[in-house]
Length: 342
Length: 255
View (cartoon, chains in turn red, yellow):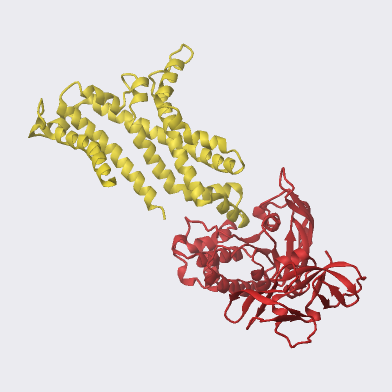
C-alpha cells in the first residue's frame, strides 16, 4: 500500500499559495509526518491525497495506480480531522460502522466489526453512548476507529491532537502510533508540532511555502537539517552567521571556533547551528571552543534549566540547556557544530 | 434595576393577557374594572359559531401548507446558502437573514394587491395566494434556523468526513445533513406555524370573505360581546403560545 506523490503542484485560485512540485513517498506501513509553519501547504497536501481538494498537476499513486482522477468517496482514505467531525446524530457504534454501512455490510457484521475496533481504541463500553457524552480525547479515538473500519489504503491524520489538552495529547500520541503500527497502516500525519512529528514518525517531511525542503528520519532531520529553515523549525537552536577562516576554523566575528568545515574554501559564508544540549557549562580553562560570558534569563524545566548565555560581541545570545546553568563560560565540541550553507 | 424593568415589562405583557383570560370566563363586563359572574358560555358560543370554526380551519390549512412549502424550499435553500457563503457568496445569505426586518410584511401585501388584482392574474382573495404570502413571509425564519444549525454543526467538516468514508454527494445529503437537521427543522416549522397562525396584517389585506383566517375574524368579534371576543383571543393565544413553547423546547433539547 505504498503512496507516492510525484511532482504534485496545486495553486489556490487567484493566489500563489499552494504546493510546488512536491515529490515524496510513503512506504507500506510507514508513518510520514508532514510538518511546516502555517501556510506551508501541509494541509493542502493531505486534502489532495484524500481527494477532498482536486485540481492538482502531477500524480498521486497508490500501489502503482494513479488516483488523481478518483473521486474522494471512492478513494478509501481513512481520514482523521482536528475537529473530530463525528456525526452528532449517530451513536458511537454507528459512527464507527458508518463506512461499512455505505459498503452494504450487514448490520450484525458491521456492528461486530465496529465493536471490535472500539475495543482496540479502548472504548468498548462506550458503544451505545452519544457523541456529546465523550471527551475530546475519546472522540478522537472514535474518529480513528471510524477511519480504520473501512480498511483504508492509507491513514490521513490532519492535526489529530491539536484540539486536545496537553495531558491527553502525549498519551493519545503514543496510542495512535501503537495502533498505526499494529495495523501496519501507511500513514500521513500533518502537524505543526515538530515534537509530535519527531516522536511519532518513521520519517519527517518538512514543507515551507509549498515546497518540500527535506524528508528524512527524525534523528537525521534534527541532527543534520538540510537548511536553515529546517533547522529553525525543528527543535531549539542557536544559529549564527560565520565565515570559514581556514580549513577547520570558523570566524564568528567575536570568536574563532574549531569545526569540521568539510571541503569549503576559506572565506565561504555559512551559518553555524548548535543545539542547546550541546553547550557544555563551565568547561575547564583552556578547553576547545570555550566562550566566556554570562548567563541571562533562565527557564527552570525540572530536570534541566534552559538559559540564554551572553557572549560579549555576539549579535545574539546562545540558547543552552543543562542541569546547572553556566556561570562564566560555555564550550561547544567541534563535532556538535553543524554548518548550513544557505 | 434590571429586575425592575423586567417586572414592568412582564406586567405590560401579562396584564392584558390575564385580563383576556378573566374576561373570557366573566359573565358581564361593561364599564367596570373586572367582569362580574363566571360562565363558560362564551367558549360554547365560540364553538357553535360557524364563521369562527371555519376561520380556525382556514388558519390551520394555511399554516400547514406554509410549513409544507417551506420545508421543500428552506432545506435546499439553507444548504445552498451554507455552501455558497463558504465560497464567498455571503451576500445572498445576508439578504435572506435581513429580509424579515428590512421588508415590512405590509409592503408585501400591498404589492400583492396591486399585482394580483389585474385581469392577467386575478387571484386576489384566493387561498393559494394567501398560502404563498404566508410561505414567503415565514421562509426566512425557517431558513435562518436551519442555517444557524448548519454553521453550529460545522456541516462542511461532517460532509468531508462522510466523503472520505465513501459517501457520495447524495448519501451525504440524506445520511448526514437531513438527520443532523431533524430537530432544527422541526423547531423551525413550529415557529413558522406559530407566526402564520398569528399573522394579521397581510392576511387581512389578502383574504376574501370565504378564506378569512382566525385573526381576521377575531377583529370582527370585538364589535360584539366583550366576553366572546376575549374567549376567541384566548384560543388564538393558546394555539400560538403552545407552538412557541414547543419550538423553544425543541431548540433547547439539542445536545
